Length: 196
Image (tube, rainbow, N blue to C red):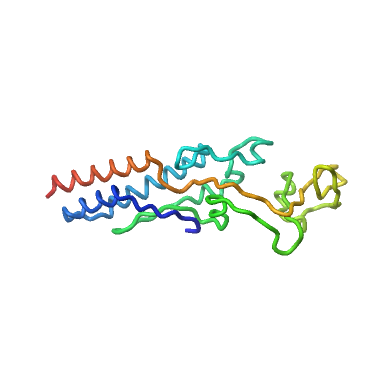
């Protein structure tokens, strides 16, 4: 998984130790933990609320065109997955840009002077201006530097020296997640005690 956050919670660890004291296999409990983590992470992409209950900063695209932040094409949220074993439960996403979205950071160009940020659907589909179908002309206005398509009379890309991506945490445990995990573990402990 390309973005992850380690959770080391004393109460959860203590509940797992109590379960192990009954000689119970912890794999089902780890499956419960992984399922809770995966489900709540998926929910964060629908609600735009981080594990601490704070709303994500709305992206420029959403502010201008509507939709949901971090869900332009759905690839990041759709990549949420989990796995578990006898000694571990984990969930995360497998996109290379996931850490930037989780923790935030600054993007700067590596091979050119500017980042080309698509402004239109046609530019987003093309990705890079090198793959844009049509003529692009450099223009500079009081609003910035752009690559302009004279045929459509539309600025297709804005040229920027850097882009600051705010942190939009989707991985982690909220208080409710933690309580759900402890409740699931308590049910497993009670089941193990009855079987013992």
